[in-house]
Image 1 (cartoon, one colour):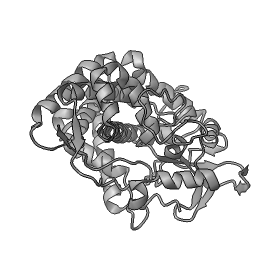
Image 2: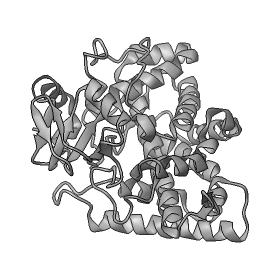
Image 3: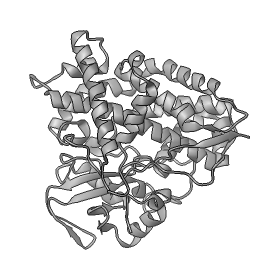
Image 4: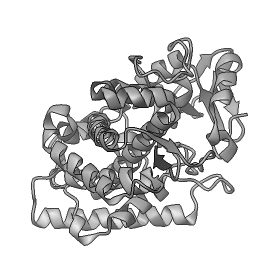
Length: 387
């Protein structure tokens, strides 16, 4: 029933999510070899209870080698809190204003390059370019020495899974190793000549008087690049997809850009790219007549919880007037997405520029091809045309 490796499931997971919420809210998946939670209240409780639902064994449905226990997403308090404290200042909304001109500039440059008389790929032509330039500026990555597309391609490969072998394949591991080498080179350069950027700060950071070990610095930097590019790019693509599929919502956002921030939150609820994350139980848990055992893995299906009518009335309606307080589009609890503020700023500014130039558009493909990932859900291409 629940198969995160199935292309058919990712094409439309929501009927399965509803069936699980209604009839199997605590479901053992033979395909995934873990429990699956789909009701909003269960998910909201789990993300707050890190002592029971631990991330220390990894948080991706298919974890990358040697990553668990060394990054923000794969540690629990108190270590997690200390790691987060090192970088969260740079991601706070009030500290991101300096990026706004860069984001607008990247969006305008991308939009200038497309031919509005022909179909264009929103992902390759717009969101990928804005995402990479924004992240490189935020982290202080050496854009002059690496090809933007190469960095993005490897970041996207890192979060993918092989639907046949049901895990990471050689190409995914190779992308992970490439990204580690890229991060290591940047870290080494910053230690020789710090520039004040986030990686410079992180490469020399200490927790309680102890320097972070090389593995923590390397893998956290690698994860920041991966998550920043894929999460932001995937989210922006899903936002554009929602606007393409709901013309009235698109019209209203184009006419009144002040609606865009709440449309962003509704997109995160309605069609989040961060669909499913993994936890490991630290104690037995009785839930909905099932006994989940200590040591079992649990899938937190955020995409299902965001469509739970017990929390959100008419959940299958994309409504830009809705204010979906408490949605799980950025997770929650101690592991709530650190990059949420920058994702919202980048999406707001880029979509505003996009709608100002192309207020009316439609999809040219009736069937989308979805990225093969057991954790994330976003299309590989999004072909649009102005109308």
